[in-house]
Image (tube, rainbow, N blue to C red; front, side):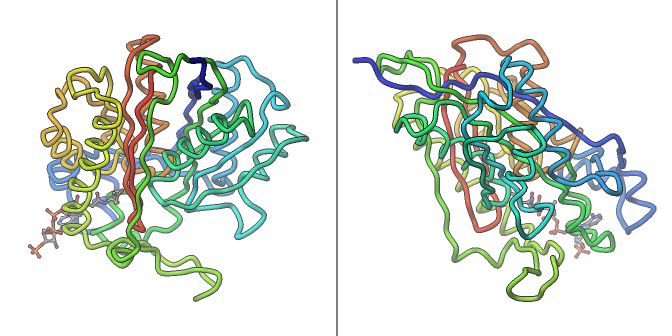
Length: 325
Ligand code: ACO
C-alpha cells in the first residue's frame, strides 16, 4: 500500500569561527584540558562573535542544506527552529529566519525542547508531512548557548558551545514497509518532574532576565543513559530492527561518556557511533544535525542506510527517530 514517508533530503551545519580550547578555558576557571577530556571527551567549543545571533547561525546552516537539496526559499512550506537561545523573546527566531531566507509564504515557529529541539522538530515535521499538511519543511537546531554561561562556574562552562544544523525534509512515497526510505518511527518523551536538575535560571515571566545554566551533572548523567537507551529500545521494538541492523548512530553530543554508556547498553558497535562532541562540545538543539552533517561530509553516509537519532535535554525531554537515508 502506498504511504507518504518523510525523506531527509539534505543536511547542513555551521559553526562560528572563534574556537575556545580547553587550555584557554583553563585560564578563566579552575580546570584543565586533562580533566575536561577525561570526563567529557570535549577538546574545544565554538563561540559566536559579538552581534552573531542564533538566527545568523541558523541561516548559514539552512543555506547549505537548501543548496544541497537544490531548493529555493519559496519551495519550503514550514520552518521549525529548535532553540533555547532565541534572538528575542519574540518574534520567533524561525520568523526571522523565514524573512531573511526570503520566504514569503507558509509558516514558521520556534520549538523549545532544550537539547532535544531538533529531534522534536524532526518528529513534528514527520507528522505534518505524513498528514499532508506540508510537503517540504526546513528543520533547524540553532544555539548560542555560551550566552547562558557563567564562565566562573566550572561545573557547566566547560560543557557547552555555539552552532547550528539544518535539514530539509520532504514528502516521498513508500510502500508502508520497513524497507522504505524516510522516517520509519519517532518517539518523543518528557518528564517535567526532573526539570530542576538541568535549568536556566531566568525567564521573561519570572525574572525578566535570561539567567545561567545550572545542572546536577551526576543525576543528569544517570537519567541521560537510562532515558536515551529506553527511547532507542522503543525505536527498535517499533521497527523490528536491532543494533546490528543500524548503520549509523547519530546521538546528541552531550558528553563522550554518555555516548559510550548508551552505545554499550543498546549493543551498538563503536564504529557506528558518530562523535563530534570533541570538536564543538554540547551545542544543545544543534548537536544532532551537526553530527549528521559531519557524517554526511565524511562521505560515509549512503542511500538506504539506517540512521538512528537520539537526544535528551532539560525538561527532561528526550526521544529517538529511526530513518532510512
Ligand atoms: N574541572 C576540574 N574539576 C572539576 C570540574 C572542572 N571543570 N568540574 C567539577 N570538578 C570537580 C568537582 O568540584 C569535584 O571535586 P571534589 O571531589 O573535590 O568535590 C570533582 O571534580 C568531581 O565532580 P563531579 O561533578 O562529581 O564530576 P563528574 O565525574 O560527575 O563529572 C560532569 C562532571 C562532567 C558534569 C558529569 O557529571 C557529566 O558529564 N554529567 C552529564 C551532564 C551533561 O552532559 N550535561 C550536558 C547537558 S545535559 C544534556 O545535554 C543531556
